[in-house]
Image 1 (spheres, rainbow, N blue to C red):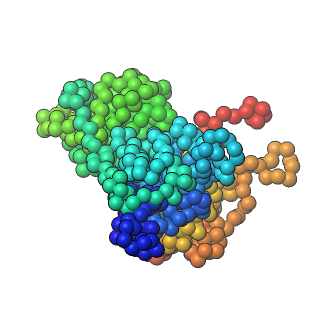
Image 2 (spheres, helix red, strand yellow):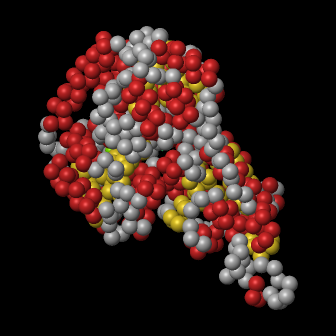
Image 3 (tube, rainbow, N blue to C red):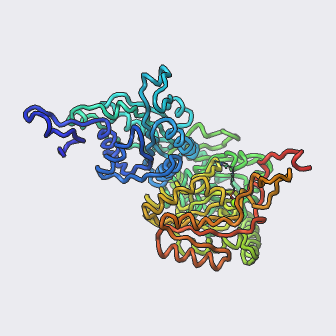
Length: 580
Ligand SMILES: Cc1ncc(C[n+]2csc(CCOP(=O)(O)OP(=O)(O)O)c2C)c(N)n1
Ligand SMILES: [Mg+2]
């Protein structure tokens, strides 16, 4: 092999003037490697099989999935965890479409990823002459991506990859689509020209400093507060400004609330955490400082009953157009979160007024009352096991192993786990995010295991698990330290619905009763456990963590314990006829 960028075997050419050659396949791989991207999450086939093969030959880690959506979710969460775009590789048309949901979800959640899809011949696609897997992928991707690019000439691969990387990670991160027509991959050029065409991206996500005026304005609003609150979003977690954010919270003395994926940015047992008094602080606060959190549906759009009396908002965000999206923002601070928080910290010295005792006492009183109530609920040991008694075990296991990553999806399984399981380290809780999407489970678990090299526990509703369940084979194939806990309540939300017509089909929310998900992983050499009591669950979890190998625990949950849509019952329109 010539020691140049890729090669076409020069030995078969006349010795004298055969320059070493490269091609599209090699250039794509070299362009990503040059920029420190060393892992591909994908699924091979025409026209990218050789791309995956060559990537592995050239030292990239290639994680091959059973469905592109899961590969895309793994890439997206890899991007979230590392601040480098995660790479997902798919075939054309159907493979591309399978990956598109993950791309759209990444864009919605501001995860940096690049979906690289092979595509069919442009000339045939554009004339709609019926090519193999014909589809105008670029245009389909555009509305679901932060940016979308197509490369037609091998000499543009370096620029195309550079643009994709910059678009994914700069400013507000997001999903980027990169279209690689089959013909491009086979195009050749001299290795020397190829090497010169590659681009090493300098400062891909430049710091963006907030204006001094915006910082002063924010500090002035914060100083005027009687009942201040800090709200941390997953943007804050993404920024990796962990120490500065903690210093801001602690130096200001202000109670804070983490959004789901910001849990653990400060440990959930921190004295200033107001999680257990969420409704109270949202309604009663008079100034709220949002740090990398958006006022979308997850925060009731910043208005209505949840938010009580009118209040002033300070919003720290990297995107200027996020401001005033739902309600008026009194003090926007625009910049990268690390720089904004550092600038605010500079203005908070010992003379900065601390929140009054009346406010802190009221928050603590409410918090302690709710914590006591929760402790009483968690202490119960009903038969069959319910969400609470099972999650008590998981709470204790995570407390004893704070560096595990928790992946979580479902309805009741999601909502109860979020409020019961405390997190202690940043970016260790990965879940359904902005869309409340099902299907991220195994993709996120694989991405997190590959990127961190550490134990992952995926807490999955039985319905949620089904969306990506076949990836247990992938988990076993790569022997990843993933322990899947299926909360098996025989269905979507609960397993007790009846077919109102009296027909022989079960109700649309009900699955096979008493299913043994643990048998599934055994088919691929993983270890399965069946747990119907908290003690059995605890034993299985401890063994799984000690092993650090693929495990699936089928946790039997009372099929009557859940509620419709978990905590989102209010978003679920119900037919008046259905209620009769
Ligand atoms: C892609 C997608 N399809 C469908 C839904 C609707 N949905 C919300 S939660 C859920 C499953 C809830 O059941 P399960 O995972 O078993 O959790 P449980 O409430 O039973 O604990 C579904 C299908 C969704 N959020 N995303
Ligand atoms: Mg269920």
